[in-house]
Length: 111
Image 1 (cartoon, helix red, strand yellow):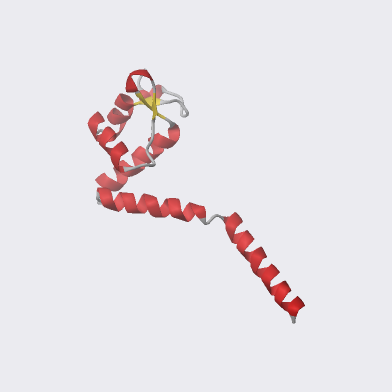
Image 2 (cartoon, rainbow, N blue to C red):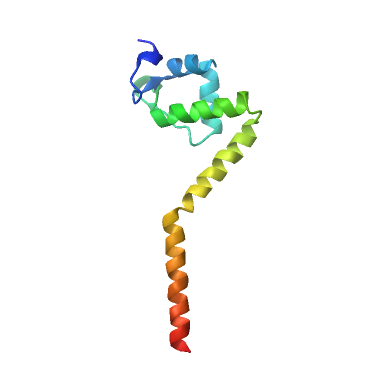
């Protein structure tokens, strides 16, 4: 069954994904060494199965390299900066605001 007929959440083999993006399989294996975010499942015989998140990441990497003019290093920096931005979630911003309010209240109490 071709990859286009698979359900949206189905796992993709490396062959299916390589065919979909028009790149050889060895390129996907190379990208795995360059992008730590790309970690497909590996089953017996080291067969790779790409989850929907992995497929989306491969499509994004392919687009950035092929259509946007990024270099491997440029995509690495972009993905790393995005991962760093996710750490500053709205929850942490809310906690920072609460902390500032507590500090202000303590300062008023001490005065």
